[in-house]
Length: 492
Image (tube, rainbow, N blue to C red; front, side):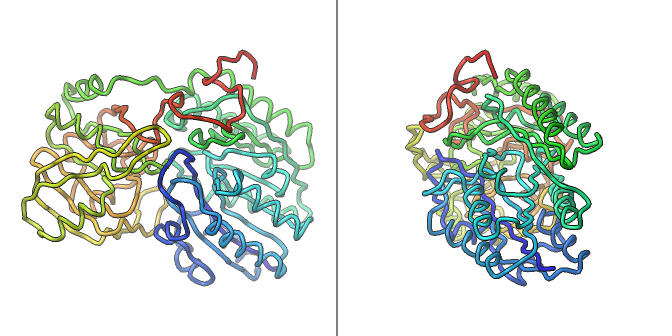
């Protein structure tokens, strides 16, 4: 048996000004051939689970690509075609099965459905080829994706700590179908809900209940996999929104029944999927009044893990203005500021214009640097290994990194975008966040993976940026309407 295993992942924020070219994939991690096993075999990533399954089958493993970039703007046509070409070329060379680790929310310059386009091309070359697909919980599922694979599944956790297990599940389904153990069929559908990702945490309602429905369904005879996708609302494409897909053993009626129960439940909980904002001044004052730390402060509108620029200073400026003390911040993206701090060295004091280097024309914002005086505490190369439960074992490269200490605030400044979902963003630069009074993160939900129960309280701070949790301010033009809450509709 010859099995093609590949990863091609990107969560595309169509409102983001950050260019997603091939270099951006290389910065986060782009591998081919034997380098893939070396990079991922000992991790908890889906591709590691796929390789394990292939080894169990005694199969020849072909790994044409494993590439992922931090969320950002649309993928350039050149980058997309390079990656898709590597995968389709491997299929055309001949194989018995394809196991794919995709995201489900990739938008390229020339296609709004990056995953569906790839799968349709593979199907065109090999109409009967068994294809397994693992997707992120924030997948914007499309008909093209479902129609061109054998079985598709998504993560059941956010933060995503079950990636390996989910990939193993769908891989076993497809490999089992090749032995005649099952006959996978799928039913999928969408609700008319544009859910906000800040309300999709699977430890919270309503996603907790929807995920339980999926797990309960998988206990039913004949149900091989059931998934609810929260969707990614920061993509202006027709298919953005909350969906569900169910895989059964040859029983389309059962698949449709479970699918309807899931999309129906999502619609009934539609109001619970909508984030209610709070004035920034009030939220910071509320955090300041809290008596016990650490207090987690979330600058969610500037979360590079959803495609933000990571250099908006709105929240940091307000925290400083209100005089909060002992604040650890991760992270501000400003390669130029890092170079300034490298030039003066550790222990030197300096004043610099931090952040605010990027304009955001899609939402009418211009970059506004914040003038800050502090001392350079640490300089590193920004490399470390994830030890927490999400992306376990993956090598991180934040690029040249520095820590600026203002006396009341220690700010981690990076040269490459990286969402702080693991303690390593602090410990790699000598900061022990558990002893800080406040932990300010440019994150939304993923921080829970590494920081767990560390904070005594969490306050969401509604700043500005292209990952705003107020979808009404985003200029949607392609999104299929009507959809709740942008449209006050009464039917799903």
